[in-house]
Picture 1: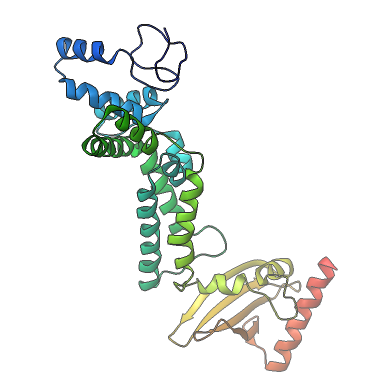
Picture 2: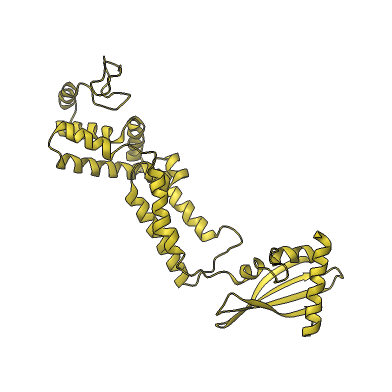
Length: 306
């Protein structure tokens, strides 16, 4: 027996073509289904249209949807978990990509307004948590979400088409998957979230702002890297916070086994900062000795790497 839609050989007892998901023996199937079950002919047709909308993975989603019904909508989808919004694009669910991108943008705006300080030394824990949360929700409920979206679109197609041929064509066009879907999803994320988020100021953690910066004399070396090379038991602390400036302090032990405390003053109206004080064993140095001390730090760093 051969499929009337794609022409490929199929199992004579199959209800749907395993190659293109086209329904086989539609009339006989509808009659049998109406006789042997409680489903009405319309229910059977709707089920067939859903399968045609999904495409060749319809058996997979049938199993997942049945499991979801037994577990309050939960059935794990690995592609949805690992690819997240790219999977949504692959399945043509672009509006959900848009919603999530807007949600990310709203989170950034709220975090800025409440004064949250981002950790720029690595992946910020808030960003990591939001990303994991979205991936987990899509992994657990992605199949259920896809089912609801498929049912909604199939119903709309049934209501707006007048012939079987036109309906099947629309189901194939609007359903299934597309290779360029993830690309469109990525572009939506860039246009709706990434670019607009650049205009939202970021409250950077004051300690990280100094740690990840550099001295004028060594623009390619982070201060934290230099200090870790020169001092032992280094610690950073945000010791003062005001409307006009912040004070960040670094403490460590130098090569002479002296306790060193270096304070940086960060100005609120700019990204500039300066070394405001240096203390050795609790004794604060004057400006001349402070500059001499910093020169010795640079020389000692040079001794390690040059």
